[in-house]
Length: 331
Image (cartoon, rainbow, N blue to C red; front, side, top):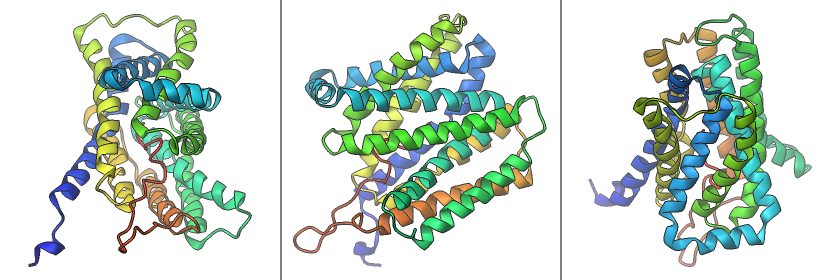
C-alpha cells in the first residue's frame, strides 16, 4: 500500500491528542461526585476551585508570554467579562446537573444541546430556510431530549432530583452555546489558549462570591480531596485544553467533532462502573440521538455558505477550526 494513503505521524498525534482531551473531560463528572462525597463542597464551590486552579496553571504555562493576555483584556474587556461569566455559569449549572441528575445525563444533555442550538440560531439569524442537516439535527435533538425527559422522573441514589438536574443540564447547554457564540468574535483576534486563560480566570472570579455565600467553602481536609481538585483544574481543564488545541493543528474539523464524543462516552461508562448509575434503554437511545444531532449539526456548519474551507494558492485546503473551537466542548 502506498504511504500516501496512510495517516501521517502528525495526523496520528493530532487524533490521539484530541481523543486524550475527550477522555480527560469525560472524567470530570465522576470526579466531581467523588469530591462532593468526601468534602461536602457544593457544586458551585467545586466549579470555582476547578476554574481557579486551571487559571493558575494556564497563567504559569504562559508566564513568559503574558503580554497577549494583557492585550486581550485591554482590547475587549466587556466581551471577555461576558464570556468568562458565561463559562462560570454553565460550569456551575453542569456540576449542579451532575449532583441532581447523574453524570451520564448531565454530560450528554449539556454537551449535545449546545452545538444544535448554535446551528439552529445561525439559521434563524441568517433569515434563510435551514439546511436539511440543520433541521434533522434539531429534530433529532428534540426527540432525544423527549426520551430522556420522559424516563428521568424517578429519583435514585445517583440522581436524587432528576427533573431539576435535567433543567440544570439544559441551562448549562444554553449557557455553553451563548458563551461559544460570543467567544467566536473574540477568537478572531485572540489566540485560543489566551482566550481560555482569560475566560477561566474571569469565570472563577464570577463564581467566588457564590461559593463564599454558600457557607460550605472550606479547604479540603484530606490529601485525596486536594488531589482530586487539582486533577480537575490541571489535568481535566488546563492539560485537556492544551491537547485539544494541539490536536486541531493537524486534525480535520469533522474528525475533531467525532473524537470529542469520547467525552460523554467516557462519562457514561465511568458513571456506571464507578458510581453505579443505571442507564435504561430509553435514556441510552435518547443520548445517542442527541449525540447524533451533534455530528449532523457540525456537518451543517461546515456546509453552510461562507463557512466552507478556503483554499490556499496551489489548491491546498486551509484547515478550519472546530465550529466551537474557541470554546472547546469540554465540561
